[in-house]
Each structure stands twice: as C-alpha cells, then as structure tokens.
Image 1 (cartoon, helix red, strand yellow):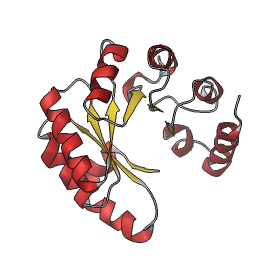
Image 2: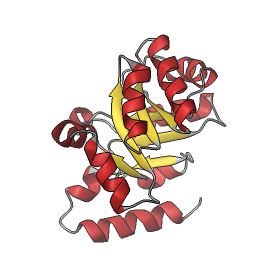
Image 3: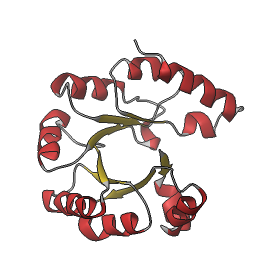
Image 4: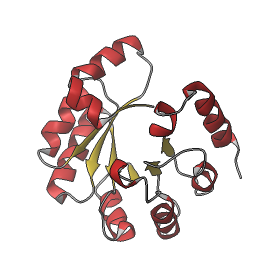
Length: 183
C-alpha cells in the first residue's frame, strides 16, 4: 500500500494520487485524509482520484462516517478509521465496524511519538476485538515492530522510521524481513 500522507496531500493536493496511479497502475493507494466533515464528498474526491482506501477520524460524527462508507461502497473502496483520540477504542470499534468500516487503525500522532507508541492501545483493541481487521501507524520502527507484529495487525504503516533513517533502504529491508516472520 502506498500511503499518501496528510502533509503530502496538503502540499500537493489530491492530484498527486492520480499522478502516482499513472506511474504505478497496480499499486494500492491510501489517502490519509483524516476526514472529519463532509464525509461522502471528501471520500468521493479521493476515490475519484484513484485511491483505494481513505481514512476518517473515529471521533467524528456517525453521519460523517456513514457518508465515507457510502462513497467507498459506490467506488469499490475501503474505509480505514483512524482511532486517534477515541476514548474507548473497543466500544467505538464495534460501532464503526457495524457501520461498515473496513479497518480500525491505532495511530500514534506524530507529535506524540517521542513519548508514546501504539502498542498499549493496539493490545487493548486486539483483546477486545480478536477478529477485527486492525491497522497500526505512528511510532512503528525496528524497536517496536516485533511487539506490534505479535498482535497480528492486517496493515502496518511505517513512515518516519524509514524516511528519517540514515540508510532508508537498509531499514526498509530489515523491517520487511521482521514483518515476514510469523510468531
């Protein structure tokens, strides 16, 4: 999955999705839009640009999330719910999956990563929802990858651990190799 991160989308606009789609026609694209309002309209923009997944914030109103789900269904796309700032991730997770969302993403905000990893919340959500399709993002790197993989997330998003590494290719290879090992 190629994630089109929020800063990239702000800087370059959704047109970057169409450009990447042209360069990599078979790639899976995720627009990290963090939708909070106008769910159906905003999701439609990403799907029309060629994205396969969009993100919506789990703390937003149900009607917004229902709009994102409706757009995803019309376009054959999928919905990833960013659980950042959700109080009771298990209770809200059940509600979100009942609305038709595809993935619940435990996301440690960039600004929090110096003091927090996604691990504790991921454990709580996995325990409360053993069969849910989970994603994890933020604070994922070589020090945390083994513990994260033990909880069997469906999607693992790695950003800064690669982009800020002295040797991004080597770190990517090491992370990929560790992800391929099943405990």
